[in-house]
Amino acid sequence: MHSLMISSLGLLLVFRTNSAYQRFVEGRKIWEQILGIARNLDRMTSLYSKEIGIAKLHRIKHYLASFPYLLRHHIRPRCIGCDDTTPD
Image (cartoon, rainbow, N blue to C red; front, top):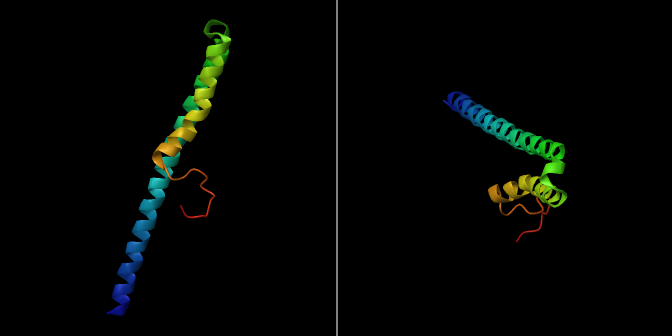
């Protein structure tokens, strides 16, 4: 009876581990797409910097640089330092 329970518990743990890894991989793909789009927009604004103007160019680059960090804060609002081990 115990060996049957142990094997079913093992299968449950394997299933949970695989599904957690799949969620991690999917999130990583989305994050890479966001960073890729931000880089492409940065390149595009650099190409058309004369038409855009210096002030707008700096503002766009500032927004593009801050967007991934703001998105991370939106997804995980309590993760300001993420390396802090001190409780709130």
